[in-house]
Image (cartoon, rainbow, N blue to C red; front, side, top):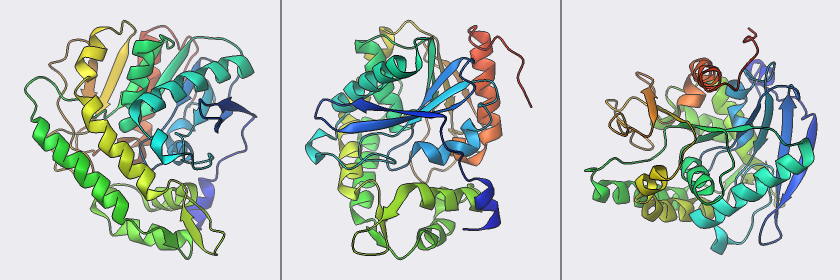
Length: 309
């Protein structure tokens, strides 16, 4: 670990709670920041971890009651049954996590912040069990009318195939971090955050060395499931009445992970994009993403205190 990465070392959460999921597995939720502030609940993209987004959500903790959690089989959570890695299960997991947060930390209006594939789970959750006061979605893979679904299916299948080919074992987190330095998808992510990725997505292996916290086949199956549900996104959005802010990657830039789409034609969404950034925008420019987050919360009346800097 470099000195810069050490500076990104997360603090211990002020409190934790366990959300019991439908299959008996447990998702660990962690509370950080100001317990008297407006509540922000955050989760991450497929194959990632909520703690990886620390450079972003650390900018909210002075003023906000920040609660983070990982998708099943990711991050702090133990791997669960592969058969349950699908979008309907993730939506139900989300519901149970939010119920556990309210039970453990008290009931208050909640802003959900989600990235990538997790955005669809949050939308499906809100569609079936209205819970949130607002949603902020980073580069959701939502496709407007007229989009080429064959291209999306090709992308999802390609991501699934890449996940299955991904190395499962590493001698150290530094080995994975070195690989990320050569990856086009991480070319705009700083070296300390690349190292944080390795720290937060690997766990010690019983056989020595390190292994991926999210088994590659679990990640791959989620990508495969996502395609079918992505086609339902517009129908789901039609029935959701809470404010939704979408922050996209630059739709004109080449993509190395997921293609970004210009969603400005969807009147249901408050849409902006960040020029020159890719699908990994919360990791590439956490300051800009945090500023957009607080501005959104102020606009909808859930950030009544001055922003601390």
